[in-house]
Length: 83
Image (cartoon, rainbow, N blue to C red; front, side):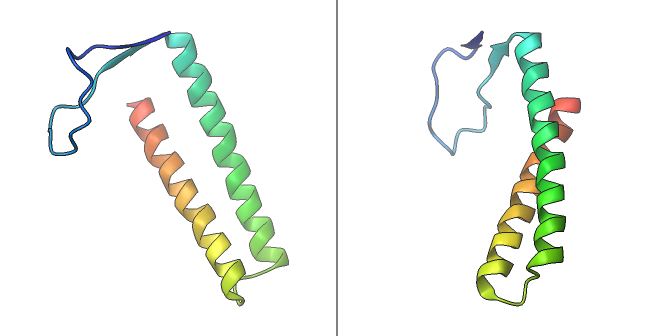
């Protein structure tokens, strides 16, 4: 279960106040575990991609860079979740 804790859901990107939500601990841990598994998988996929296809062709380089961006995003979220 999730619920918004702020009085109103604010969509204004200029508003410095973060949106606060209440989340069941079990749901949060399941999300954490899924994200951790996805991160491990993405790292394996990147290694396999580089070993088999490399990055010499633009298409392969762009795919590898997208996987790296996804990995960075997952690592940042995991760091916040771990507190």
